[in-house]
Length: 166
Image 1 (cartoon, helix red, strand yellow):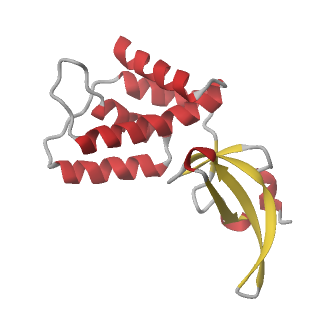
Image 2 (cartoon, helix red, strand yellow):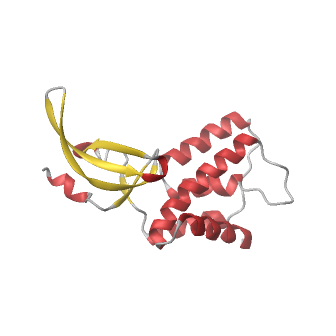
């Protein structure tokens, strides 16, 4: 094993940018194109998916530990802010929101949640806006739930109450 592998251990929850929170199940060695590779095996229960990443590429692939409470607090502050609704075409905004969600950064994801959240007195959202909002809040809630050691439904509820109170 290389020294880098010690950064991520079996049983650790980690965040992969495009898939969110996963659990490291362990490492395995596979022969790929005649080369022996040590792979991290990460289970994404919510997507029923297993991802294998070369140990040496884990960092550069964007894999990271769960956010600290302090980092999550910064994201939660973003949720309390005023929505920044830009008057650009939805297709352009959707691309930007998608990029923020897939960045894996909780602060960027919180910005998407904040900007797409609709209160009852606002105009209805399009289907794609609702889908994007749901993807963002689910991604944020999963990490928030792991940090707070609560279930995801409670996490979504807490996040929405936080925004309602703002």
